[in-house]
Amino acid sequence: MRILAIDYGQKRTGLAVTDPLQIIAGGLTTVATHDLEAFLADYVQREPVERFVVGQPKQNNGQDSENMRRIIPFVGRLRKRFPTIPVELFDERFTSVLAHRAMLESGIGKKARQNKALVDEISATIILQGWMEAKKERG
Image 1 (cartoon, helix red, strand yellow):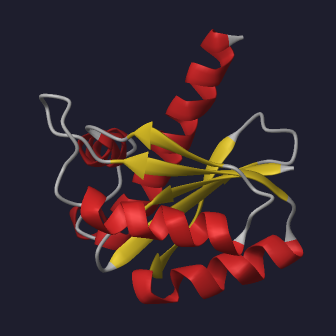
Image 2 (image 1 turned 120 degrees about the vertical axis):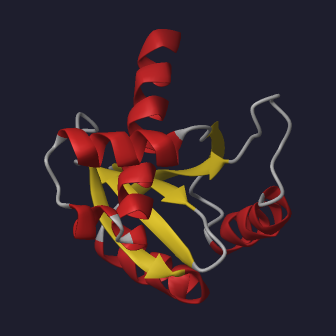
């Protein structure tokens, strides 16, 4: 079963998934946030998902960021719509910065680096990778 990470945004949401053996995290896509729940419903019909990992935006001081007021109701809807799939929040601080750095280091051109949808997808992948590493450390 796959783990699906969600980098929830006001306009766009980046998605990443693991392979079925949960070894590798990879970008899935970016969808318009207003289409997200329908996309997820379709996806879980086709692919078995063990858990959703939703990026929890925090400020540098550790407090929740302003976007949490959108994420909390979304998480509630997710839990109601998919009651058998656990939802876990994971600190997403600095994922956008890391996504831009990864794009720079990989040699992606300037025009592609300005593609916000690509940044959101890479951010979701970084959230998922971080969650997987934290899980491994927890044993």
